[in-house]
Image (cartoon, rainbow, N blue to C red; front, top):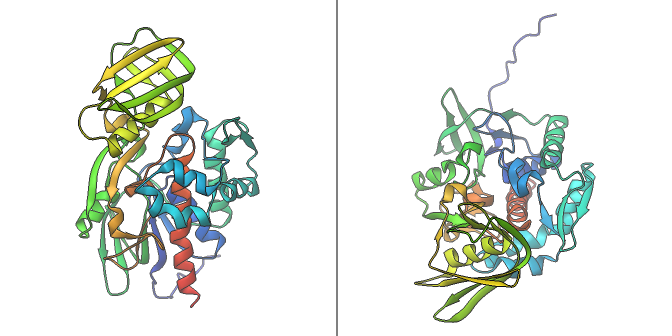
Length: 352
């Protein structure tokens, strides 16, 4: 039996989420659980493409530490900005949420949390299953080409059509691994809307060098020295590859240098009874980095709500903003918590 087409007038979707990565999927799940209708746009053919790569495909989605400790490890200026988000959605709540979705969890000795299978697909599928069950509409293979404020909210344009939305959440990530869809769309939208965007730089990436050998060390020590003084140090994995040096300890030092370093410095590595000093080493490019440092300026966003200070109804979550943390579950925690805060803000306003 043929159904008659609906005669109801079109109405704006309450929330348009742009970006189907970690922050976007988490926001859509949070909206679905609260009964907030939303529409999720993703430029690639599937959700969570970059998330599937995290921790070499194992997906270290958070760390079993207090939110206070996580904020301390993240450091300024990110810690002050992300405090409310992380306190309201701490690592324990993130882990409990995935357990409620049927994901079994494995804890490493240092507190890092993974799906028990050590397969990132389990996390992405958990998101997908809930969004399917809640009948959340997903527009994949659908890049957004522009966002324009209107009296009623926003017009969200794609190549083929335009959608009216009461509010918009931009969660498009950074610019690393562009093949996954992280190509700077959100930062471009922010600029077009008059918001300041901080320069985009590589975070958590390795250094180019001629390695002494191809080898891996589990408990190495890496320091950054500036003017002969130790500015920061991290202990952890160091791996020498044919093109240079990587590993968690190296990544975290590189992030610190990019965030806080000024002028010349030395990278001192101690591994397997050996010591190696690199003077002003060259970091790998941002397209190969684990995270992007830079993005929408934190001064443009209210940390209590994740809403733009200049454009009411426009929200941000995750790496599209100038937020990042060390390797080890911090960056996904920041993505999840900021996404949840944005959705919580919207839901509380609609109840008034």
